[in-house]
Length: 103
Image (cartoon, rainbow, N blue to C red; front, side):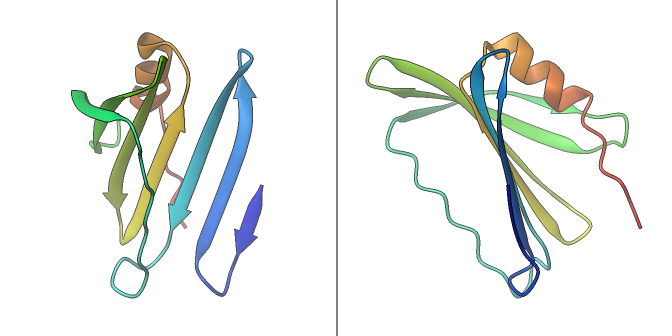
């Protein structure tokens, strides 16, 4: 993991069922710039809504023979970004049951 309080940025990378999964958060939408380069073919797969009524867009990425998914959303002035080489249903389930803690 990486936390940079000065830049209002945090990242966690781990394996979920043996597959890589990354979560990144940028605080303060007005002062921060987030950039993630995706080299593959991007297709919007679906959108989900969490119990907190957060709409999350999920995209399928095809890069060479690899397939992975990414998702992102804004919530209370923060930007959230996820990427993982999981099966679609597993990735979607994580997004649906995602819960953002509030101060």
